[in-house]
Length: 101
Image (cartoon, rainbow, N blue to C red):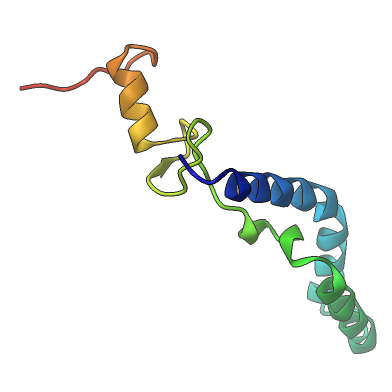
């Protein structure tokens, strides 16, 4: 089980990303516009730098919904390999069967 503080920090980052996404997208559009004057693009770069770092989408860590484990994460199931195997063994996930040969 992951530390509760790490899981909560990641949830807070997700909220910040959702809140800041329109602002960041608008500023990035100005920065990437080659037709805009260089001064305007530079001001947009400075405004983007003033936004909180946790508002960036790359700061989010994929974590297991059940345990909070950050590694061995399956995106399709939104859980770690350990939680997936546990639920699969108990027959709680349709279509997953423990293999044996």
